[in-house]
Length: 500
Image (cartoon, rainbow, N blue to C red; front, side, top):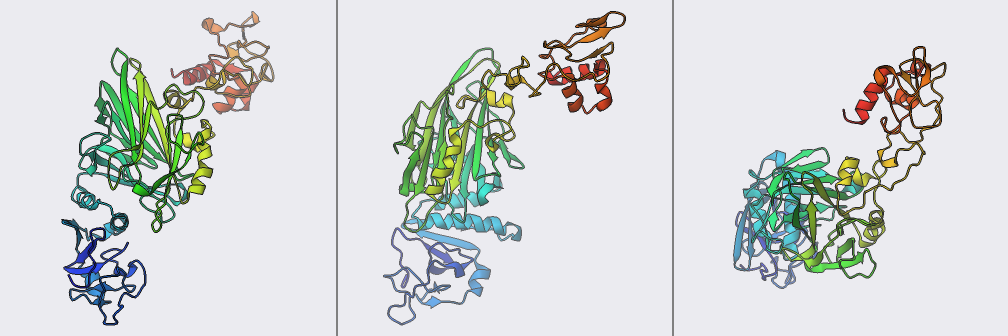
């Protein structure tokens, strides 16, 4: 059509059959058109074919003339018609006012991809046509980040080497953004077990996105994402439960496609040589496109120390979207009979590669339970199940009470303790001498280690807690300090710490 440049690498968008040349703008928001250059070189009010830019807010009408009357097009734009070479696709845009924000964010990502020359128009079509069947979660994270998560990813061949598409049941991060930079991913945090894609219907609780468990290779496999509020970071924990009576060994593939596509460059690796190999626990990549800069990506595949499992193969080629650039890692894991094991991954986005390289050092230390936001919401039992991080605590006893720190509910225990403040009564217990056995007295028999009905307790029974600490944790009050912990207090506390 006259006046509209339509080279194969440049899309044309038509609203109600009115063509416009567009760069990074929206059909229903033409005033945001990219650039403000005057394209009317001939001073005839036309849209010259040799230049793609329009006056700010202008569009080309059917006669190839620039037009700045936007009200009709804004109010009537119900269909976006994308022409790309010989391919034509249609995207129906919902007009429900409640979905305006979601529509705006989706179209911004969509058109940003079109501008980069991406072949993702079909994905936009499927996004809207499948929205009634799939579930999307948009979670706000730290650093002003936003994470879009879906449960309908698939590849054309069902493997991490195919081409991306919607219409499946696989868990994925569709995209993430920070500081106005979009397109961090073209699907990430995707999992295959023995070449079978893993996912299920998602549910959201606060910052946590949990996918329904699926049965694969005799295991029950479940994916759970946690979007952190302290940084632009997403944690992915994949659990593998073996309900059988025999050990099960499986191959696990973890794949991430980056939105930076052919402009993806390696900015840093954990071993410092800028070459991604099995020796690298993490990798930082960024977009070097001269116009559009996607967020810098940090992908963490395993932790420092001596984890039981590390990568068995890695690659910078994954399933193809606009390109196959990304991170693919393979693991071989064994899940003992009747037990659960897990793999833990982290994704972090930053506005610049320099900031990403500075921030990545947090992953050079194994995060501590209760002290690091990286493991917020997890228990020590869950951390102990993780194979690709060395969460097994050292065999230390910081307070010297005979209970190792990772089993010690009460740090800084002092033996002997100051309880009882008056006297130790029958059927009351306290650590009154320098051993690890609780002392008591029996009627008419004086102090001893036993009690009524043969009851006796050790510091191990109380998970490293003295009587004074038990009184404090159960909020029993100072009155209980006079004579030691009575039978009901000891019974309640021992049952509590031993899950009885």
